[in-house]
Amino acid sequence: MRIRNLLFVLMLLGSWVNAQNPIIQTFFTADPAPMVYNGTVYLYTSHDEDSTVNNFFTMYDWRCYSSKDMVNWTDHGAVASLKNFKWLNKTNGAWAVQCIERNGKFYLYVPIHGEGISVLVSDSPTGPFSDPVGKRLIDSDHIWQDIDPTVFVDDNGQAYLYWGNPGLWYVKLNNDMISYDRSIGQNGIVSIEMTPEAFGSKAGRDGKPGTTYTEGPWFYKRNNLYYMIYASEGIPEYISYSTAPTAEGPWTYKGHIMKRADHLAFTNHSGIVDFKGNSYFFYHTHELSKGEGFKRSVSVEQFAYNPDGTIPLITPTKEGVTKSVSLLNPYTPVQAETIAFSEGLKTTGNSQTGVYVTKIDNGDYLKVRSVDFGKGPKQIEASVASAAQGGTIEVRIDNSDGELLGTIAVENTGGWQNWKTVNGKLKKATGVHDLYFVFKGGDGQLFNFDWWKLK
Ligand code: FUB
Image (tube, helix red, strand yellow):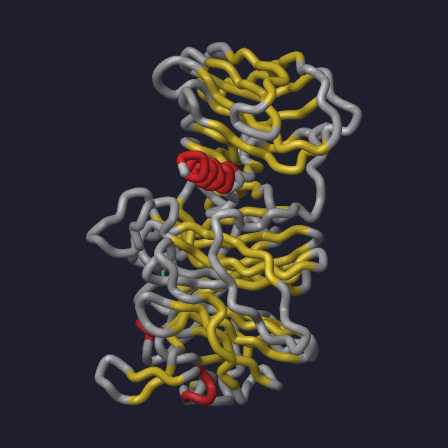
């Protein structure tokens, strides 16, 4: 009996060690919006602040992460914020974002809670973004319901922007992506009829018949079928979906994709992409904050469509994506903020250094998955800076207390921005491994860490 208990504990520990969800641990991230561009998944998220104000969503900016392998995510920092809108007299309300690319420009559609939906544009997926309109994009008479934009460009070039809570509306964007056709609907805005056939049946709070549709639509097309994925069933939210033969409907309710589970937050919000032959479902939980619904974190599950194009019920897991779709090359500089999992760390950045890892304390660690050691490195190089005592980076493989390949000594470099390249000798290791940097030192913040490279 005791041995069985022990095995059970070891099994739980094992699954914790392999935990990949939530995929970002350095910040609270919500409302995932993945975009595949140029062999990379760019993940745009809203951002729940570490300190919640007035027990409500406290959200000032939008963040971006990218991955080529679906297990390591590179942090590009806050790529846009409410400060991008000079006309806006508001400091909170940076809700669920989506970015899409068209003709080499990147359009970031953002809701500002209570201020409707706006758009920013950039020449790069990671910004800087600027405001091409100078006022809100969606000009409706239900501004408080204008949240959660989702955008899709159809094969014929027509772009659609859908959004809304608890209704669902769309506009047909013009080719410039920053204005819309005002000749349809009500001054350009088409209201979708919310019927049980289209979005499932659920009585409203007033007891009157209604639909399950709640908010957070995610609109896309796959194999000639149009999909609308959305948060459903009120609070706590499920994720459900409907499909249609055209971008404008009629929609048919198809059922749940993710049901309520204990570690899900009271909201949920999803995004779906196909990448390198696999399908991925992004959502958010309150796992990292241990139950705080205004401090959410993005998770991902790999799934497969059924042969008829329907989506199976997806279970939220701690393991998340178990297989990387490509190996990481450690022989060119790897940004330290390329992370599969970490504990105790933050990232920050500036225009000289870009994004780097900070708030490194004794015992914190950073994991990078599926690193291709090849025939084996002899040395490791790392860029670090410290105005304090410095410390040591232990280089381990396969586990945070796995085989120690070597250590890098970090001394005071004369300032938190005085970057110095330091080296450490490594024991030989070949093949593919998960690489762990385990940080050791005295009390307080030890050093900053910008990049590393095997030699
Ligand atoms: O993140 C703020 C709001 O919570 C989003 O706009 C909704 O979709 C829900 O996730």
